[in-house]
Length: 243
Length: 252
Image (cartoon, rainbow over all chains, first blue to last red):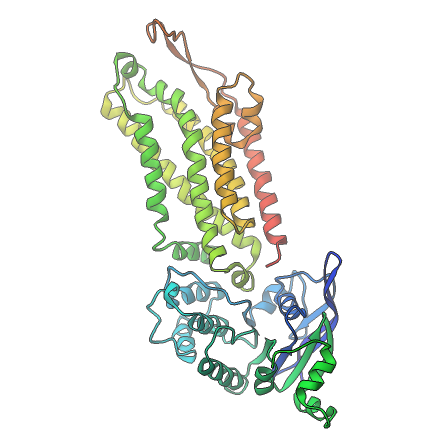
C-alpha cells in the first residue's frame, strides 16, 4: 500500500527536553491512522511538525512522496486539512463567514462551504455567530474547515474533545466514513484508548516522544492473547492510559 | 496577497475597527482645532497648525497605531487562528497582508484628519491659501514616524498573545515621546520612534513671551531634516524585517 506520510528520525527538542525522539512514522493511503499516547507524549508536536507549524530539530518528513522543505511546503500543505488544538475561530463572524475566509485562502469552490456544513451537520446553524456556539459545535466547525478543500490527508488532533457522548459517536462515524466516501487518509490523535480502538485501522503508540508500536490495530490485539488491550498499552507506554 | 487582504477586510466586519479609529481622529481634531482664533491665529493659521500638530500627533497617532494593530492581531490570538492560517498560507505573506491592511486603515484615517484640518482652515478664514509645499512636507514627516511606530506596535501585537504588552508599550511610548519634545536634547526624541514627530518638526515659534504673548511672535521654518526622515524610514524598515522574522520563526 502506498505510503502517504513517512518520517525518519523526527526529533524535536525544547532546550533539554526532548519532546519527540527519533520518530519513524508511516501512514498508508486511504487508512485511518490512530495516533495514541498519554498527555504530553509528543502527539501534538509531531502533528504540528507534519504541518510545518513547528520546525523539527532533526529528521525528515515526507508527505505524498515529497520531502518537506521551504520550497515544497506550499504544494504539500494544499493537500492537507487539519484541526489542531481546537481553534475557537472568529467569534464575531458566522460559521459561513469563517469558512468563507478559509475558502478564499484555499481557492476552493464556494459550493464546498455548503457541502462541508452539511457533512458536519451545522447547516442549520450557519448564520449564528460562532461566539454563541457550544464547544461541540466549534469542534464540528473545526472539522468543516479541515474538510473544506476535500484534502487527500486529514490531520485531526483530539477531534472529540468537548463533545457529548452522542457527538463523539457521530464524529467517530464521520471520521471512519471519510476514506471510503472521499478517498481521504486520516490521522487522528487521542489519549483515549477506547476512541482509537473504535476508529483506527492502523495505530501508532507514542510515549515520551518515542514510537512504541506501529502497525495494524488487529495485530496489536494478537500480540499477547493472555493480556487485554489495556494491559498491552500499559506495557508499551509504562504510563497510566485513559481508557 | 490580494486574497489575504480581502480576508483581512472580511475578518474586521462587525468589529467596529474603522469607526473606533475615526473616533480617535475626531478626538484629535477636537483637541487640535478647538478654541478662540484671534487676529494672530487667523493671520498665521496655516503655519500655527504646522507648529502645533506634531505635538498633538505625538499623542494621538501612536494611539491610533496601537488601536489598529492590536485589534487586528487580537482577533487572531483570541480565536487561536494563527495555527489554522499558518497551515494554509505563507506566514510571511500573512504578516505582510495584515500590516498592509492596518497601514491602509491608519493612512485613510490620517487623510481624513488632514482633509478636515485643511477644510477647517479655509472655513475659519486663515489668511492666504494653505502652503501646499509645506503641507506636503508635513504629510511626509507625519507619515514616516507613524509608519515607524506602527511597525513597532504591530511587531509586538503579532508576537505577543497578550495585547496588554502592546497597549502598555503604546501608552508608555506616547508619554515618553511627548516628554522628549520638551527636553532640550534632541537625542531622546530621535532615539524613540514615538519622539520622531517632534524630531521632524520644522516650524518654530519665536519671540513669544509671557507678558507680550504673540505681540512680537513669528512662526518660522526651521531645518527641514530630510536626513532624519530617512533615518526614521530606515528604522521602520528594520522593525518590519525584525517583526516579520520573529513572526515567521514563531512556532504555533
